[in-house]
Length: 104
Image (tube, rainbow, N blue to C red; front, top):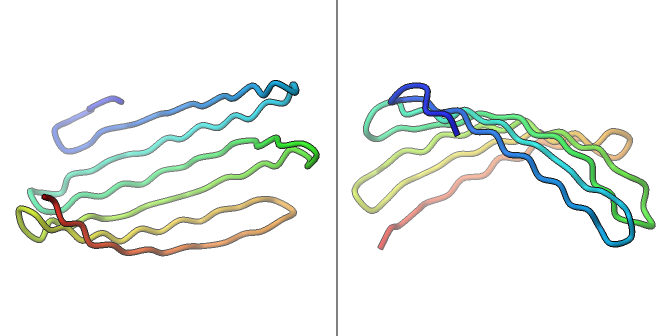
């Protein structure tokens, strides 16, 4: 994680799993986190990876995601998230989600 300024940070994650049967599953993700003031934040990112689970053939997938979080008060927040996922030769889908957070 690299905090470039007080209002923006860059995050990078890499994952690699070596299975006992010799297959390999790996992925990476990069995202920017933004703070637009005291009560509004957001993020945007990209991820891709290969999933290898025999007897199925290795599957490649890529995702683009973004979202906003609004602090409604000291304990409450509302969020809206969007993602686009592409698994070539299998499916392409878009998803939206919303949620309410209560901190206690």
